[in-house]
Figure 1 (tube, rainbow, N blue to C red):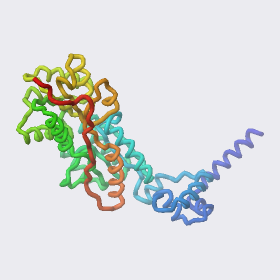
Figure 2 (cartoon, rainbow, N blue to C red; figure 1 turned 180 degrees about the vertical axis):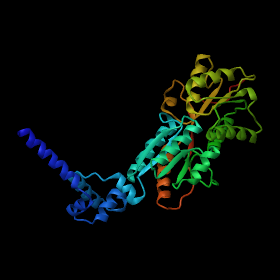
Figure 3 (tube, helix red, strand yellow; figure 1 turned 90 degrees about the vertical axis):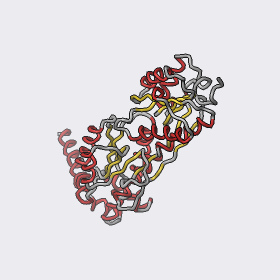
Figure 4 (spheres, rainbow, N blue to C red; figure 1 turned 45 degrees about the horizontal axis):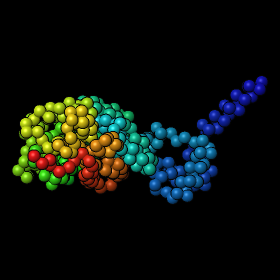
Length: 352
């Protein structure tokens, strides 16, 4: 009998919670239903005091707004989809953290997918995110298949390209100018007296950011009458082991370069590690520099000079831009700053 009474009380409490709705919350909080709706859907549009009062009532009554109903009434789900080539390291990881914080501050959820630099997988993930009702998309880069571009032109939600910058792009872009960032690194090395260059590039297949960095190096060298010889430019995947393998290939170049520019942080780490294994003095015989700035680069026995992108700004600005697009505000492309972080892996050209 006692158990039956306890079960009845639990069922009654569950029924009471089920009966809690928008009108009940509004009545207890002493506000209109429209105000409760604004607190739930657009918290930035009401005062902090009002948000606190209504949220306290929501918590006390145990009300959970029905997401499906909210989506039907507002034609929005409050979710933003983002597809990144990788999630765990470097610029992308920092951008994701900042993006999630910025979206949460405006009461939106981040849904993430990883494309692994596979354009077909990226397209498939974009379709799935749209099918699940995301309000907007954040993509990386601007080079896609014709089928993907056609799909993006047909969907009725805004999207933007991140980690690239093109002031003339019809699609808003938020990111660094990859070519300019790398040309600034070339200028730094030339100012140290270097004239013989090599480059360990990340594969440019399906990667317009890697292509822009490679072209930025070539163009900056051409402006001062220099060039990388064919045997001094190697290209591969993006990890540390690949950096080690590609560095060994550059060592066979004749004449050997005095400065090697790496297309990302992992390739640079691999190159510095392999230089140590091969007995190459860095930077006494050869300077090695990178792009992106992961923690490991500053913690190696020879810390690595690199291009540091304000990737947290990329994530934050991308989040705010896509939300502004959803809300019908005018937006434009934004170039995100980068800087050369000089460490021990770069130095003056060695004397012959």
